[in-house]
Image (cartoon, rainbow, N blue to C red; front, top):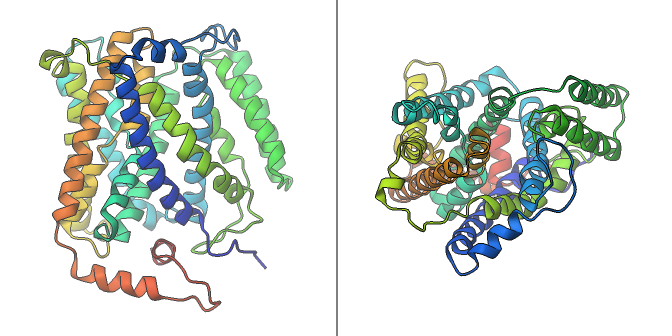
Length: 427
């Protein structure tokens, strides 16, 4: 018999931690802007780029707090991303092709259209073309955080849909980072990474359920990938795919499932420490000397337009067309205006967009700073516009009835289930 962890589930923990973590991330980003433009400007940049003396790879050189955050801690973030992707495909809302259809279509067009719009604005300059993927990403913590501020005005179906779209979006971003932003590969290091990955796969097949061997494998895999030339954070996703999972569809997670245990353990650290630290280290843009000419330069305006216009056009347009053509069914308990509002929230690119921006223009601090301006501009406008649409959009007549029924529903074993858990089970 499968054990249950009270009434907790990965989805419920995910939504709660991402919502609260999104608020913490907003605070961290605001603090970074204050530090970058206040009297502590020099100290802020000095601490971020102070050499720690340790050299892990010739390519990176001496490690700094900024590198430890972006190449080290963010690998743990990608480990969690990989766990979420695997859980959803094996044990969640992406477990069947019917469930995957609409989120995959929405995420794919939500990445393609922003890239096209970016190239329309910035593609004329060959130096800027490498930034095409910057507006393709969605920051799930930020977006879920905004939804949390709306309370009951955001239907459960929209929260679940945003979650699945963002997870598919993350998967696409991982592929882009691995393929588009890897300049050269060292064969020996790649071979070593393959050996470690093979050992982790063998442990999985042999039934090893203890987490420690997999965590050791993750650390070794991270170092091998770091030396290989592929961005080290990819190790997080590869390691996650090797973590065993015990299926518990539509119910709180089994304590016997290593994947669910690790996901529960990592969520608070990633949501409340790692992602806010990344925001603090990367969102600090000095506004000194920046005027309208700099804000509306091809790079920042291309990114901002891609995030704000591209995401809503790609995601909302694909949902509308899919429903009209009968490819997929609509979102239960949500109006078209509410769906449009969520499509706008997907334009919050923040964490992943900042991350890709740093990879797109290595060795060119000026372009990295311009990219940050575009990401911040597009993300803030998307957040404010999406919030306003959802705040004033009429509520679907079925929403209030459905959520009252779901909130009051009691399982046969006596455990009260949250709206999110029941929505997952019924989705």
